[in-house]
Image 1 (cartoon, rainbow, N blue to C red):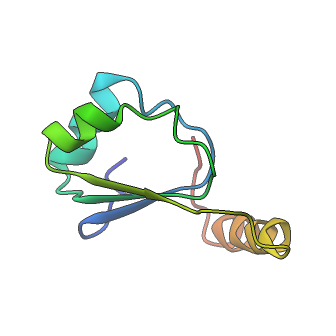
Image 2 (image 1 turned 120 degrees about the vertical axis):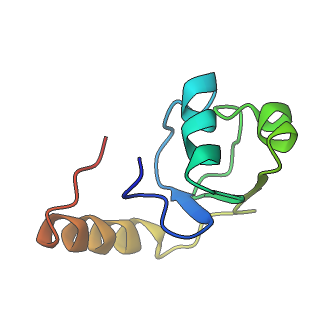
Amino acid sequence: MEKAAHGNHVLVFTEQHLNENTVLQKLSICGVKHIGLRAIQSDFIDIPRAKAMAMRVANVSMYSPYSAAEQAVVFVLALNKKFILG
């Protein structure tokens, strides 16, 4: 978690369990103020709780035709850096 939250922004690539109170608390402790979602839906995050912790949540309004290819490149780069997802 600490490695994923450099600075005050975090980008969520998949539907991670952000409804769990402990995840939002850990992000808040790491100093995260902005959560970016690469998803159209945001029902997997507790937005009122995030707002109560002074975190802003934003998501994409629609998918790009290139999004699958972009995500594949991100995963290749993460693999290259031995970044552990999960």
